[in-house]
Image (spheres, rainbow, N blue to C red):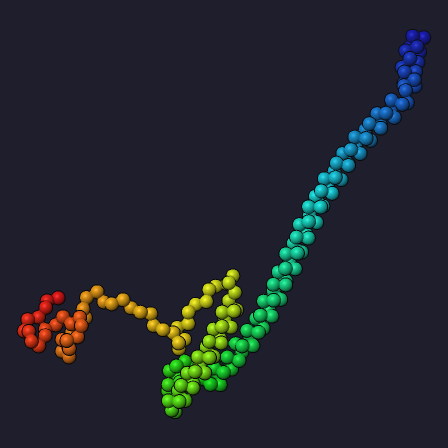
Amino acid sequence: MIAGFVALSGALSANVLADPSDDALAKLNELSRQAEQTTEAMHSAQLDLNEKLAAQRAAEKKHADAQADLEAAKARLATFQASVNKFAAAMYMGGRTDGMEAILTAESPQQLISKLAVQRVISTEMATQMASYRAPERLPLRPNRHRPNRRPTPRPPPSRPPRCGPACNPSRVGCSCRSPSSSRSISR
């Protein structure tokens, strides 16, 4: 029994005699490690927040620029819409605005010239407005088939002379048919 008492008291005294500073030091080390992990997590979160805030500022700037572009486009559209409305009203009230209509409705040659001149001015003005509407970043302006001052494209000369008919003029340049002075014909 005494031996048991001595063994038990030795075990208890070892626990009782343990240095309290060792326990506090172990706890301090554990808390220090946790604080370091928390600081690293906070630093990573701060870097992530800074990146996200920078991305948000860039997106807001891009949005503001897009809004400004939209407002400018709306303002330009409003000016063109007024022109288109005027043109549509003129078309509705005055009929077609091509050259054939002017020829058919003119009462005199002077009136025909006047109508064609007015149509040319209107079509030039509309073409100018449409060209300014189609900014360089948009589709290129397509040529207008109905423009009265459009010149026809030159065609290359035919590779062989044209065929002559019964009303042929043999003295014509390039004629390959029978000439009146000759009874032979050139084969094709």
